[in-house]
Length: 208
Image (tube, rainbow, N blue to C red; front, side, top):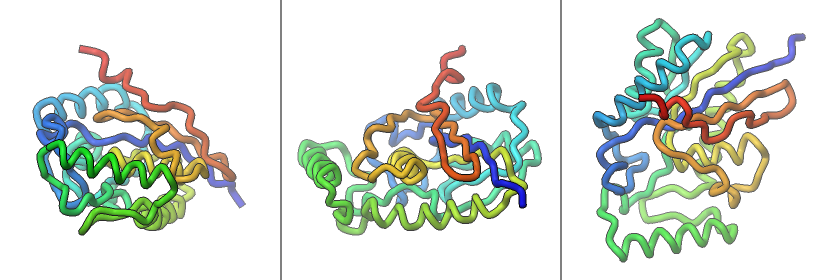
């Protein structure tokens, strides 16, 4: 039986206007890329278009598809997985960054770092809930041994959680994985474990 080996190229979506304005957008905000986000998407495409991707997996939010649309246009098959969606921030999605809102977020983050991983905003999701759907998405992705090079486009907070899941770190360590718009985490799987071989790689965004 062939050992399942894969290389996952996991990127966060490009910039949206809400990103630019510092307004939180989670699973409940289906926003478009802005001009800068489209430029970032093009830069990533130019840097990685020669990688022979077998499959693309994206979230159900259009900003992820817009970020890698040029790869889809090459004819690479793609699939939307709800497990790759951003964490839902509930009542705080789309709200301006007021001192009160910032305080609420700081309090939530403190709870998560303290291990209270079921804590969430009203109408939102907890890290543990996101992990459960990420495990389902991962099961789908890993069920295809013939897919060797995989492109995954997802979201910032969800990406941090996924890196913990892949490397068997507790979710309390999520903030050890920095990110920005259209940054790359390259992860290999040798049949037994996942290894992050490139973290927070933004070299493709440095040109022009």
